[in-house]
Length: 476
Image (cartoon, rainbow, N blue to C red; front, side):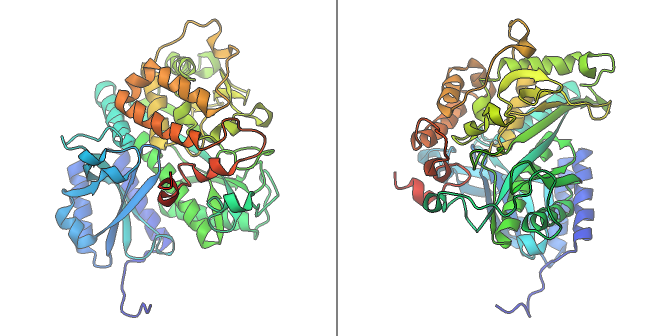
């Protein structure tokens, strides 16, 4: 179609970065919600080149959902956006299907037109129940409420940064066609840190990194990872909800850039046996009044008593929360000790087989790194379970807890059993959300062979929550 008569908003990458960093600073400084809302609505009303606002929200398993609202409609009706919750897996039953979307105006992004389309901006939505509170199945809202409560009661700011690994495979929709091909095709076989400037993996990483910078990610470094065609693009710390939002955007951008290049960005934890899987190492800390509360220059490994208490509680509940951190059948292939898998429920400064690592740090960077997280897990669920467990969980009376010989499950059925039997999960999620989440995981597991075996099976890809399609599930 001709674009001769269109005049939709298209901003340069430097302009986008400036706008998004300004919005990020507002978010970091906790500018009042009504002030930000008024500013955003005025911007939308006064900018003729914007045709639509894309609203994003995530379901219980962490799939990102998007819907576009006409700008003029949204400016008039932003406080009355309803949708059918029964159509979202893990949300409401059909008899109580109406849910509402509120807009988190602080989570507003200006987007590159060559990736997201011209004349569009993004904003994250919050799912609101009929009683006006955050819907229990919208874990983003649950996390946001928890973070706000920690700040108001204790002055705590919950910080997170995630190292998200993925694979780049040849062909579009390589995951969806796996059941016919039985394999994934690498686009690069160079390995750790090695990629020629013009090869497909390097071009993909460069393009994705450019988009991230434009979105205000504040990149740190990017590189090919250990396995062939594997990548990692790192960016800076953020407040916990913003950090989780960035994980969703990171995966969205990777998938879109890869598709535009005729390839597939995959966040399956172990798409290929015999090589290292992909993780999402989750670095967390707590600050108050500008001070990092996990830092103590005189503490063990220069970590404070609060930091070690946080670690001990996660180790205590490691098996309870495993299903939240490793959310798919395929994730348990990654917990294989032959490939630096972090499957040991212990803490160490050096042992990369430990569930938790205490990296070398200083007063600014001291943190706890939870390594046993798959890149396909719901990021809001991951950060909520880690922070709430680390602050409010129990500490087991196990001799030498931090180095005890204990291991995470090597299959989803064991993880499901631990999850269902856990009283801590009842406290963490509530019995209703706990059961709905368990049912979703059970349904996926039951469509796959019970024993993982040595090769990746078609079913564990087809029925993966990131890959599945409505048509396929409706056949059962």
